[in-house]
Amino acid sequence: MNNSLKSKLLMILLSLLFLQLVFIPVYEFQNTTISKIQQNLDFISKTNSLINSENKIEIETSELQRQSESLNKYFILDDGGYDIKFQSYIEEILNKYNLSIVSKDFFTEPLNTVDDISTYYVDVGVEGDIQNLLQLLVDLSSPDQVPKIYINNLDIKSKSPKGSIVKFRADLIIKAFIIDNVRVEREN
Amino acid sequence: MWREIKQLFLSFFWRRVVLIGPREYQFDYCNGNVIISNDNNKNITPLIGILDRECYFETNTTLPPVSFIEALKLKKNITPNSPFKGEKISYLQSVNSTWVLNSSVIKDDFQKSISERKLKFILPLTWLFNSREQVSEYHICDTEFVFCENNNIKSSIPINRSMGKDHATMLRSWLWENNRKGIDHVYDTDSSLNIMASGFMNLTKLQLLSVMTSNPFLTFHISWKKIVKSCLVIIFVYFLFLTALLKVSDLVLLDKKEDLITKANPIIQKRNELNKLRISYDNKLSIVSSIPLSWKAWMGIVNVKGLIIKRVVILDNKVELYAISRSSSKVLSQLNEIDDVISPTFTKPVINNRGLETFVISWEFPIKQPVIQIDEASSNE
Image (cartoon, rainbow over all chains, first blue to last red; front, side, top):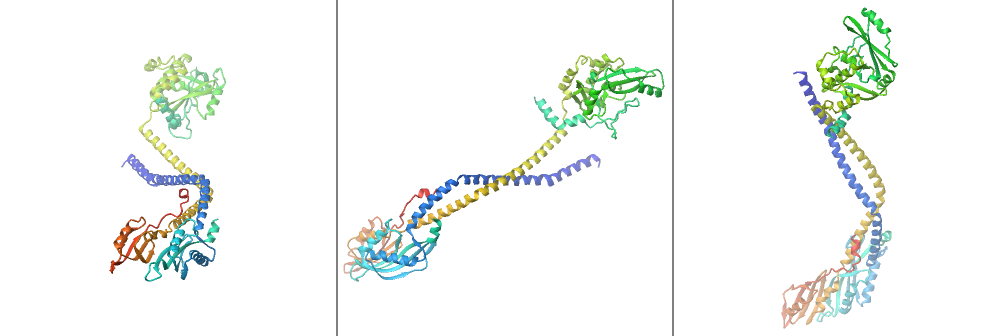
């Protein structure tokens, strides 16, 4: 093997080593760096957009807070005595419509809790005129009736076994929503 | 145009190579002989030829028939009658059994100018071409030839080895012709050179420069090897440059990113609070809006005539009506005509007792109507 051939083979070997040890790692480094640059550019673009929208966020937060506060009137605020507050509120409403409470079973555990708003219910036995009950149902559906309660279940029977249900006795399951007043004040 | 661009481009990469060249020369003129060697040794010196007659004075003196030792002594003592001061160089030439002393004086100013370029050795070109035994066109290839003006180096012509022969011949013929006018002893018996010289004899120095620089001989001869090498160099430099650029960009962006994160943190908190508020608001709105309109359950009861209601059970949006009537089918048909009564059906068999029918009908009623609708559009922004 002459020197020229040896030189050529050595050159080819060096070229391959260069490719393997220098070119390919650097090429991969370039690709990785380009990906990182692209990610950083996207991030910077989004962050700039976020920074520019600061005023919009503040305005929207303020507006949404106002609207959210306006919804609080539909809930019974829990400031430590929600059960008494809830029961007295029910009694007040039923008395207003001349419906006598014959039994009352207040469930101390909430039916469910979503975002600090708990749903409570009370099982009440009442007696009275059907007209008053109907008026109560209609009034409860009015937007002016706050805090909101509604009669979820109703089992109504005639008080007289032979007559119709003009005078009735009924079991009502009444639901209401109680919101954590501490949180409300914190939000405000 | 392409040629100029190519020259400009290539000269950027090869200028030093062309000007300096791989060939270097050792001159030894002290003993009266011009010896040129391209062997590598410690006295390597670039060869420089001076074209301008204004920069050097050249003369020759025929010595009396003396021995070489005596001629050397005479050489030291004879001072050329130069019109200007400068560095003297001379050598002895044997002509027809006598010695001819060829002397040149390089102008001090020009010598200084040459020295500034760190060129150590200067030789009038006529010496080269008068000493054809030692110097050929081949030897002047890869050599820089200096033109001067007002004792300063004005420009130079590099002679590339690959095209140098023709080029050197042209240069040589020009020198021969011009030197013949000024120096009596110039002799050349090469008839082909004489013929060739006629084409160049009347050219001025600048014209010669112009001819040579526009001469295709001077075009850079680029071999494929050089092109491949240069491409590899360019690619490699570009590769390194791109890598460095990417890394710098990455670092710059990283700094900017960190700055932005610092700026954006309070805003991100505000945005998170806004999102929480949205969720909370949506929940509240959803709860309030889903409160059933329970009075609708009674639409099917209060609007039906001709029955005695015994029991009503309302569970979620379902109503069960226990009642007595003369015709249960008429009750059913009345219920079917009421808007808020959905799919009324008998859930138990109808019992007929002495003309009165006891029955149970159940149906559904719509319960979900939004109680409030406040600015839903703005809350969804």
